[in-house]
Length: 173
Image 1 (cartoon, one colour):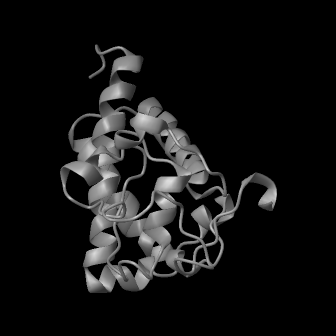
Image 2 (cartoon, one colour):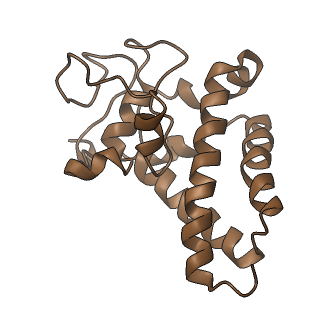
Image 3 (cartoon, rainbow, N blue to C red):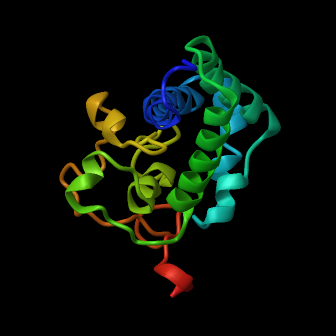
């Protein structure tokens, strides 16, 4: 991959990495012993950017190994890994921020804080969840992991009407 321009590697591996993360995230919810680690992340009572950093140490080992090993096998280079890790962390913070961001029609492709808030809601779908997307919500649409808007208003869940997640407008208002 050394001959491939850095920007092209970033684009290709961003999509591949995002799919790997989506798949691992879904496994964290579906495989009982993995859920034992991941449920710590879901124990947050207010969805905010710092909640993105609440993890069991073993989840990090499993999640990062299963995400990055396929990329290494495909020939990813060090600088690309670094940029992808930085970008993914920023996206994770944005997804957990208490912002009512809506990408409009792009919501079928891009994840957002509103989209991810449904993932943290427990009343509607229990522990297995839905909406496992990190960056590209298209995986959830393609693989049937998004069913929150069926017969419901497109609202972000909140503590008072949906479950444990409190999603507030920016600045906690």
